[in-house]
Length: 239
Image 1 (cartoon, rainbow, N blue to C red):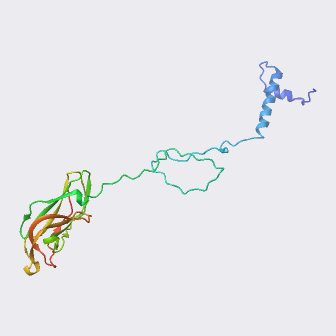
Image 2: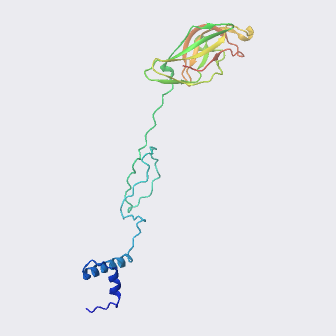
Image 3: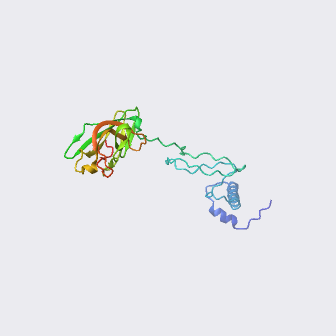
């Protein structure tokens, strides 16, 4: 094949070639291969910064592996036959049921007693003791309901009013006890006898805090039963 290169091209190329005695035919081959590579690169460029998703490939969920928040149930989406199944993302923990709290002490769990009354100047103070007689812990929170009981279980006089003390929650382990202070007038006290209407009582009807079942505590005493008298006061259960 005839050589149609312009005169001088060889001289210009030759000026860029090393003068180390490399065969001219080999240099022409390398130069031609480089030219072909440059032309090929101009026809098919792929942007490496734009990721491609292959058909049917599953995409992992974008989840922070340090986040221990239970996964929330999302609304069910309509089924798409062509959509691939999505795997569960890493670090997603299944929902866990909340830990149950300690229940309030039921009346049947408690043994209710009283300490010896402390009579003072015009008043009498009694400590009501609530002991956990069960094998599991329970809690007491608030004020007990207390009233006097006459013959045949009939309530006598007004129920105890609550003191101004702040109520807290007390946790009772098996065998542990809490106390509520009860205060009443000592006999007629400072009341008008006609208003007091002093009568005998057989004991106390006691509702533990937040319970609807009462217990009876024997205590033979006398108290004011007048409808206008509110001499009986009870405090919150305390440890």
